[in-house]
Length: 217
Length: 217
Image (cartoon, rainbow over all chains, first blue to last red; front, side):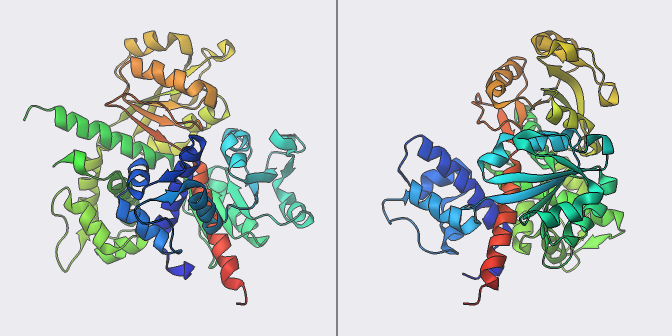
């Protein structure tokens, strides 16, 4: 597989397919057609077939996909068949909420280190026994533990680049960034920005187009 | 325009184009080719042209798009040329972080009401003078204020459906849901789920495919 040529949007869609398959399996749906899966994921069936074709041949013509089998294949493709270890920086409201949010742990993303610049928070214990360390101790703390895969930035915007630099310096190459700022990223590293407002734009459009449709023309 | 036929993914991409254009304008880039915009947004140029073609003709052949003009057009399409009023339910760590997060306000999404089931939080004042009300007062509070467009659910999963039902009952038709649960949604309403782990799957894939590439085959 030539992973470098695979569009990022394909990876995002695989992630959606994965979640829908989990859901279908919970409901004892053992076989799903690409039409049905497409409908559930709000894409067209050709898109699903094309996305999967990057990675091999899946499904049985005239039958569909075996849910558990496809789930397992996507799990392997995305690399979800293991635990990903994460360090979070910024234990304000957002950082605390992230550490407490069930979804991460459920999907195999575990917080193993937490940092804040506020000395009063140091040594406080969060969910899953996670202890807050001071941001200045970041290099030592991370050097002393099993390798960390992903850094999570939950600081105010003004701190985010500095924190990113510190994380990159320890050898971390992937960041999830919640601060509303574009992070300068060295080659060979990846930053994913979380912007809640993109989802809101979908709602705004929905409400706007409904209003337009309701208009007596 | 037949808004009902426009794929949701197109709307999401318009939202990305919009953000990139804002960024370009800040950097005094007045004209941008579809190739350049495509590259910045990580899609192919044909996709941009196709997405925009749903809504009319934009740009000048051989020249590109005028940044400010296209920004204005997308703003109109998405309905971002106005303030969207939001009510948030659940003022724990996540709800508090959302209310404090700059991005919402910056993009025209204003929190105008906040609710929690914890009586001790009632009448506490949050950012922008926002006062917490008790969840049981939701119908009265919302009835007494100018209409609210979007409900934001920041409660634990077990409460989310009940809260959604209460919001729908007041006439709100759009929800942004942060709880890790699928909300049952009446016809004519829309729920957007925020799932941070989809972004993490992209990082997991990035790290996995890098590892694969490093392997001596």
